[in-house]
Image 1 (cartoon, rainbow, N blue to C red):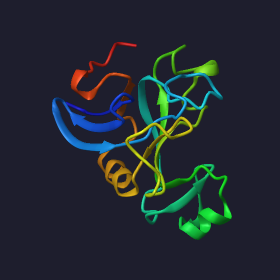
Image 2 (image 1 turned 135 degrees about the vertical axis):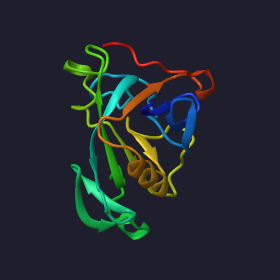
Image 3 (image 1 turned 45 degrees about the horizontal axis):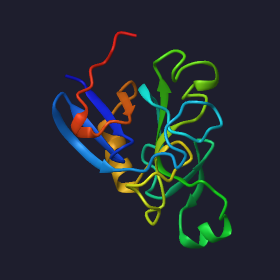
Length: 173
């Protein structure tokens, strides 16, 4: 079996699975605007994806990223006060690419071109409730653990079902 990241918008949870075995299980935060694929919607895209690129290997916990590059800053409450308008991307980035043409790949629905990530966020930000701008936010220690457990090409399924209802089978695309 190969590893699969399963994300439930309904449960606000992410699981790393190997077949039927749950390897990791985390509370997350998907989009405040709900599910959706259109560029500029600030919604979380559904369907099948892969981890296109892993960014931040060996970065310190709370390292700040802008444009997928470390800024050299470490997140702190004083940095937040100085930059209150930032959407904080911290510690690690798993950049996603859609696999379903017309649904989450190409044109106005392209997950990769929308810069949709699984990434760390400030630990005081809520998880377990929709609160992101489209990405999947995680606690920093959790995203580091996930990052270390997957490789590029790992399949990711984002859906609206409960994890208890999900027994995903990868379609032939």
